[in-house]
Image 1: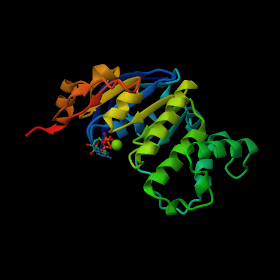
Image 2: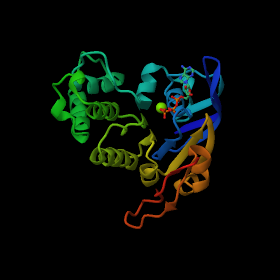
Image 3: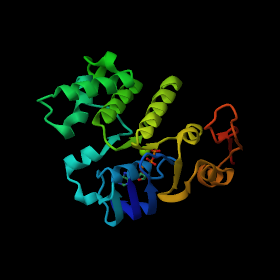
Image 4: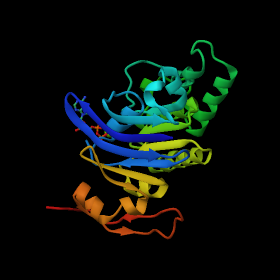
Length: 259
Ligand SMILES: Nc1ncnc2c1ncn2[C@@H]1O[C@H](COP(=O)(O)OP(=O)(O)OP(=O)(O)O)[C@@H](O)[C@H]1O
Ligand SMILES: [Mg+2]
């Protein structure tokens, strides 16, 4: 679904990402982790064609990323930004409807678009805000609206940058399970998370970035080890298997800051 070869990205003449080689398969729940400033957002934005690059190659669904025009890309991937603050007084349902822009005309709404938008809003429990201004919602509620927009866009690939950072524990699970259910329908989900326990629980593959380079990449148990976490986050951890939850692989039980 996504194939990245020898990707390097510079912003303002500073190298932000270096020698990135990654494959994300169709239907995969793929998680991107790493410390603040390690390059997660830059990588997602680069995949989404929001940041240009000179070195390397990105293929999406088998085609060179540069071969997609704006609308074709919007039918291929949706993107939930890390920062969902807005300055404009948009109606919540109109924001979710913007997800349908790739398929038609925003001002000429089709019944099928109305249906898809309603379903996405019900799935994220945002239908109750449909007539409200986005400016009147809380940070977590706003995050749910942007997730609804991405789901309404109905793309094979969904990129989400810390989509649960403002959500309470119920909605964290709700959204990750919703995304997991989309992977069962063969959609590909790439999500940035800071919660390593949740990353371990939901991901099929994890990419750990450190200072713009790949520190570890693969299955949860190979990436989330005491050694990689110590090297990357400078903390001591204990990893244990959680027998209560079938898919749960690793849990970090002790965090000790190194002096
Ligand atoms: N426009 C820019 N010009 C120069 N440097 C930038 C620019 N945007 C981001 N950076 C730098 O690139 C690095 C990676 O930033 P990025 O936003 O990708 O990190 P991140 O892993 O998403 O971090 P966080 O977990 O805090 O969201 C940071 O050091 C940041 O300061
Ligand atoms: Mg970020």
